[in-house]
Image 1 (cartoon, helix red, strand yellow):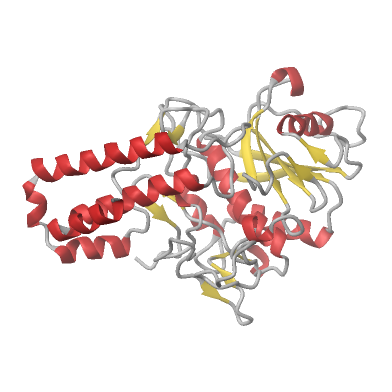
Image 2 (image 1 turned 135 degrees about the vertical axis):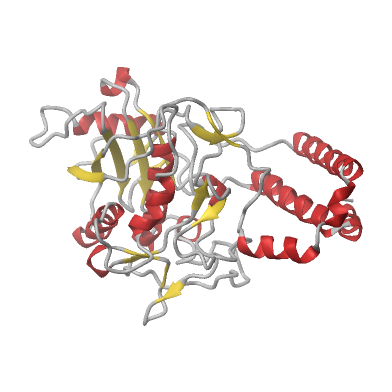
Length: 385
């Protein structure tokens, strides 16, 4: 029935077909799966079929009403709408991203990395170089990671202060003793942070509730609640009863051994997929599928932690326990023309490895786009328009 209705909309006018097609794809994606990243410390919940059918019926009724009330749609030239679609990946006035009066991270961020488990120093260097690239004062090659972060800086709080452009890697802690074991629940990650600031450790991290952001990175042999099944990373804030203060934090796992086809696509084939993915399998630009996949998830979580640190700032939807945040809107998009499993137009290095951003020390990274609040579309500095 929906397919038949879509064809009818196209015959009536292609503009209505565009709106219907975008809305259908958005609702369908919400129904089928929550990709790559998590929301706050909770299990993902899917819409029940009855709820989904009811939402789709309401959507169809709304579109019919729009067509009846606004015959001026019929006067819009098709070429204009076609060009608009080609130039604005994921764009839509239907995306209701709102500011909910909470704080953003406007002060320079002091980032504290907690390396949980056993880590190869070479892989740690890749992640450090990405962090350094976020605030590199003079990128040697464009588009750069710094250029990418400038979209996040467009978000501001109620006082007009924008998100900071300065992210300093202030300190690191190595939890190679697996202080909380090889399996971590979401709450256990807060205990990992607590352990890192405990004075009994020889070099503890400071507890910084003012400008601190704590990033927990787990090694390939560590399992985390919902990892690979529903999430590749998440962000939230600590509970004072556990850590001693409320501070924003994020977690990202190395998926190289557990689910590279889920959390490191397009560097690995999706599991259970017999057909080749739309983008093909690209080589990892820094030589490690797991860490190169982590980089994009880290970027995703840093963007959302900065714009929604206490889950009361920038997000879409009415339910703060299930927000759709600025990176969630653009999961899977890395270049112009992306969508439907195709990452978009990205660069290839001499060996055919995929990337879209340049970093310090000649590094190259493939990082997903984020929602641009000014242009109202998913955007990255490698966009062709």
